[in-house]
Amino acid sequence: MWSSLGSGDPQKSTILFTLLLFFVSCSARRTYLFPTIEHKSPKQPLQTSRPYNLAHRGSNGEFPEETAAAYLRSIKEGADFIETDILSSKDGVLICYHDVILDVTTDIAEHKEFADRKRTYDVQGFTITGFFTIDFTWKELQTLRAKQRFSFRDQQYNGKFPIITFEEYISIALNASRVVGIYPEIKDPIFINKHVKWPNGKKFEDVFLDTLKKHDYRGSYLSKSWLKQPCFIQSFAPTSLVYIQNKTDLPKIFLIGDTAWRTEDTNQTYWEVTSDSYFEYIKKYVVGIGPWKDTVVPSVNNYLQPPTNLVVRAHAYSLMVHPYTFRNENQYLHFDFHQDPYTEFDFWINKMGIDGLFTDFTGSLHNFQQWTSPLSPGMIKNHD
Image (tube, rainbow, N blue to C red; front, side):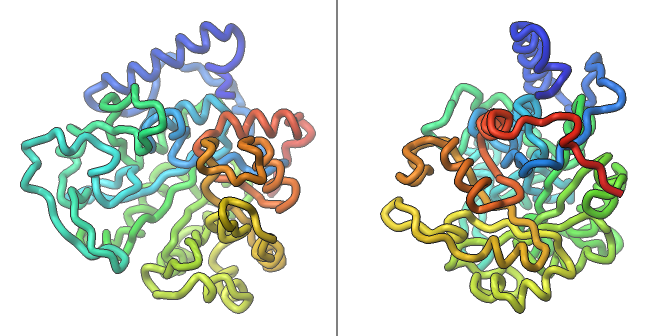
């Protein structure tokens, strides 16, 4: 749905997209301020009439996660927002990367020059050994290449795309031919603040916000400023969300793990942070929650159980609900959905009434929504 690539001649569209991916993989220093891409003026606005299509780490069902290629593909396929996890290098450069270690989704094992960098740290109460992002400078991280997390997904792009910075990710969204939102996560803030130091006593959260402010991301949810450059800030750490409340009016989302999970900063249980009393408290700081979907609707032996009242209760406190993660592969689909992701989308959107979906396959969700609730100019709302 990226109009300069996705309309007109399909063959031309494919050629142009391939050329962009070639540029991404081959350029020595990436800026993603793509020349020769002409944008319509004004840009097509963000749709707000149906649940948001949230590209989970980009279209990572097709490309290695959190790479420029994954984000470009998800924009082309119709994502409303591109989602990312923000971590830091040793020298304080903010990067788009999910794991605190590089072992799973990069080719670090092939870099013998880094063999002595393996370390062991405590992260959220777990002892983890591996190659940590915080032990590599940005210059060193640029020598690595991404690979697909899951062996059952397409491996042909392994080794082709580099790690990107927070700013490079932002430039991908800003240079899209339509309005595309960003959805960055303040990832593992306790761990990052412990091991990475910035000048003038700044914290990870401060540097994160400085980056957004530099690119003029501002405005409360659905305000004119926000609709121009939409952004949700997300985190599993409630103290980070409280800390930034008075530093930005951008909308915030509190992420919630499974029933065995505890918050990394306040050590609260799932049951505590999903209670009515906690919703009453946290609604002063966030506009929504992002729960793991199997806590919203539990399953036993891969069959759905009766839904909890989490969505209804969150909505009663004026909190949006953006569950994660929707994946097309059979091993992620409950038997009730008959191996059909469209049936799953229908259940969550039309029966559970959620407000957005984090998906690895943005194209599938976009196609489903266009089939069941196609957009028209009159359906796109603008709010002051």
